[in-house]
Image 1: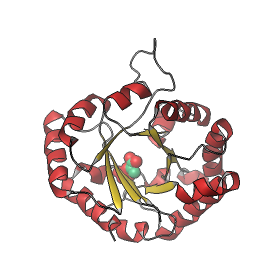
Image 2 (image 1 turned 180 degrees about the vertical axis):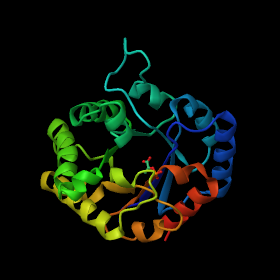
Image 3 (image 1 turned 45 degrees about the horizontal axis):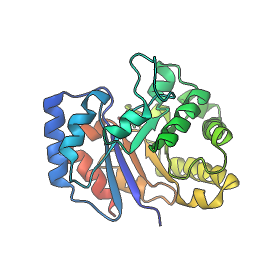
Image 4 (image 1 turned 90 degrees about the horizontal axis):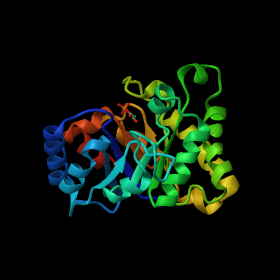
Amino acid sequence: MRRLLVAGNWKMNGSKEQAEQLVTALVQGFSGSDQVEMVLCPPTIYLDQVAGLLNGSAIGLGSQNSSEHEAGAYTGETAPAMLLDMGCRYAILGHSERRTLYGEDNALVAAKFEAAKAAGLTPILCVGETLEQREAGETLAVVAAQVGAVLARLGNEAFAEAVIAYEPVWAIGTGKTATPEQAQEVHAAIRAQVADSNAQVAERVQILYGGSVNAGNAETLFAMQDIDGGLVGGASLKADDFLAICQSANG
Ligand code: PEP
């Protein structure tokens, strides 16, 4: 049985004060669970502050991005080892906003994935199709290429100690959610693709759904066989909503 994971992607939102209020409320409201792990992914600049607030709590920490390089002359970048040093366990990689707005392609995302794993972080690889690709019937091929780039680079242990997040681009921040059946179809295809290279890893890897998850739709999504939690944007900025989503994962 896979444990569920619910990760909050704050994106570029918040302030020191808001981070303190939000994290304090989440620490008070979430005492830990055997069934679900809660992870917060604040902006890099607030990682240290949030790590301090989370100290001793049951809530984990992750970054929203991570460099493909170990160290050196890469102005503005953050190395995986630095994120680990700040207390991160996870790194979101290949989020659709980074793919679309910052030109990250499958090859770069795979390089970041490799560097993150080498440093000891658990990557959360984001994959997903645009609306045009879905309407053209290309969803499974697009997602397979995104997952395949990582398998090609790292081999059949790629997704051991890693997480995949299926996030249809048309559902991110739009209020439109994939139906549980639409999401399950893609999740099952991803797991089958991983199983083709390593059945044991496929059985263990957590595959999260992301795209307008909220307190009202989380339970039915998380009830699907191959949906192992969620990657949550907007609703992770409100303590009550995020706590309710994690509560849904508790079953
Ligand atoms: C995300 O940023 O990964 C995301 C899924 O956002 P939202 O929940 O706001 O759609």
